[in-house]
Length: 435
Image (cartoon, rainbow, N blue to C red; front, side):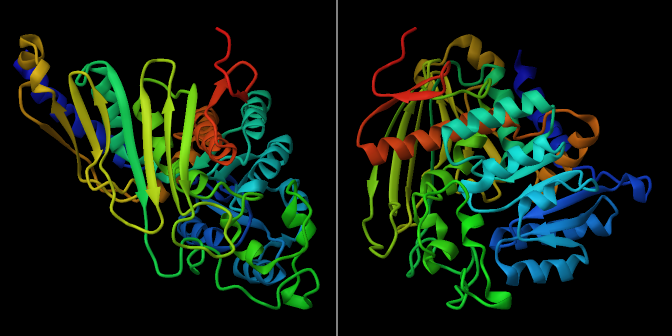
């Protein structure tokens, strides 16, 4: 029995190494390359383009179409890739030479473009959050089932080995009955979150629907399913500050926390009950979303989730999962998107049985996690799944489980009440659904 502990550590490291060796899907010929259309060429789209450049150089894929509603961005990327471009995403995703669509637009247009791409027979890599509403998440799950398309949600941290190692530890009984998961996402800056140029570039005051030439913005197309409003420079360049287009901390940042936690559990799960709080404590500018936010969620299988965040203080709390017989610390420094060199299984000595001690020992177990390029690994997984037709790391169901939680937390915060989720109807309500 004493061997079990050593074999787990040894085997765990092996699993981590296997997960870390992201095999680049080399193309056998030019005809084997995956043709990609990119919709949304703002800050995040520009970041993705740098990753795609590497895969293009290796002959894995080729960007054959780009789309953005802002003419300046569209022109720049048409020239960069020497490819077709359009202000209208429908013209790009419907092209016969497109195999997959990368979607890096504002959150409120993720679902409409994804659904259109799958209807056109394309596989989809869509940035997080997967959707803007719970109804859209339901539509995405059903569309993947109907069309048999591959859909990868772009929270690349879920490709890190630590979550899969933690899942194995839980399945092997190292923490006993799971009780609670916790995590955080904290930042701080003088200008306030979503005002910095890291996201969408410095605002161009000349840009808009009345702009000439490169300054033109198709505002109607940008709004998509959102309420009709006059053009506003801040809303266009800083959309994450407004409820019409984003859920702020919950959907932009907590998605990176709850998605990997769902990977750790025995299976992805929808929340049963969600509560949320917070407010605009420091950055009292045009924003509608809170700069400080927290949520508590309960699940039918008897465990809960506690997440905290502030954009005005950058002290994190450890990311971990608590069980009756032990805890797993996956992110000791608390930053879910930063590399963690190991996970730690920490026994609960106060309830330790002789059988547990014989199998796992009485001291902490540290399991090494390989350092990896997670964006490259997440993309490699997507490309391989396109060829094998297997489910990717962050598939539509896992993505929907994460989406329902963060969207429910936004609704709970804005309505000032506790909400329950009915998995049958995909509806939220103020009373527990009938069994």
